[in-house]
Length: 183
Figure 1 (tube, rainbow, N blue to C red):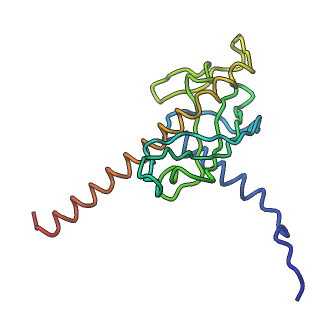
Figure 2: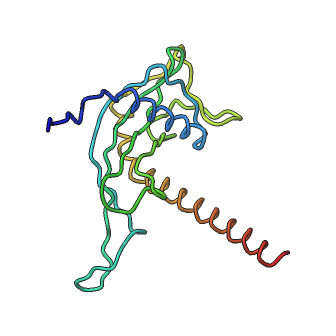
Figure 3: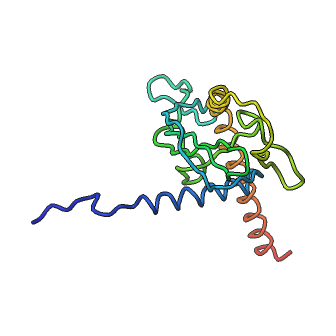
């Protein structure tokens, strides 16, 4: 029997499209709008994040053990030629700490004040300033600020997702109880 090449097909376009959809969902849910015309990966890191809410009982001594969530994180910058670039993270959880949210292993987080200092608030959320505006950039400092903020932003993202899932479960239970009780 012939060996099959697992990498026979180039699926990079599918991956790019999937990430782009996730970015659009994140823009909507996080209230930050920026163009994806110039969308480039800048830096990659593996990050271990403490997730005390996911502590579990150790089989040895029964003491809570802090489980670390391990993620592959890619810092990206995107924006149209007419606007300042906006940093965001592509994240894939690969070990520990439970899912980011129910069954979710991939997410997008867009820092606001943490590294994206040129974002401005509008009535519809946050948008980057125009590229014609004179802004002083220390790109290295802005990237460091994004990476430094990432663990807290990921914990916050995970907590918000868990809260929304609990609220959805309560709503479903209330609808079910209403149907059963006929009220």
